[in-house]
Amino acid sequence: MQLCRVKGTVVSTNKAEKLLGLKLLIVKPIDIETFEEKGSIVVAIDTVGAGEGEVVMCVGGSSSRQTAITDGKPVDQSIIAIIDSVDLNGERVFEKFKSWKFKS
Image (cartoon, rainbow, N blue to C red):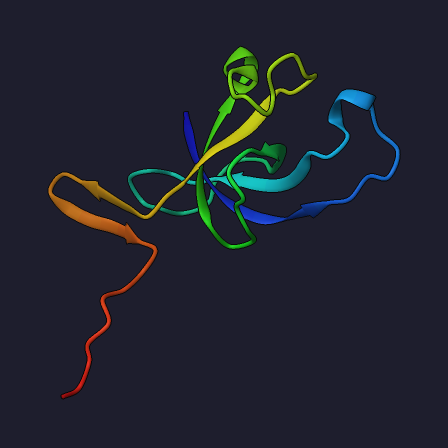
C-alpha cells in the first residue's frame, strides 16, 4: 500500500469494455516520513469517490483487483481509501480537516 495525492483525472471515451464506467485518476506517491510527493505519477482506478488534491491509499498489482469495483478487470493500480489523518511516531503529520473553532 502507498499513500498518494490525487493530481488530476484521465478521460477516455474509448476503452476496454471492462473499464467502462470506471473513474481514472492521476496519483503521485507521498513519502510517509516527510509527506513530500516523490516518484512517478500513475493512473489509478478510483473505487472510493476521491477527488483532486486528496490524499489517498493506493494498491497495485493483484491487490488492485480485490475490490468489488475492480474484480476481474484489467487494473494495476486502485485507490482504496481517502485519508483523513496520519499519525507517525506520536505526531500528526497530516490532517484532512482542521478543527473548527466557533465563536460564542
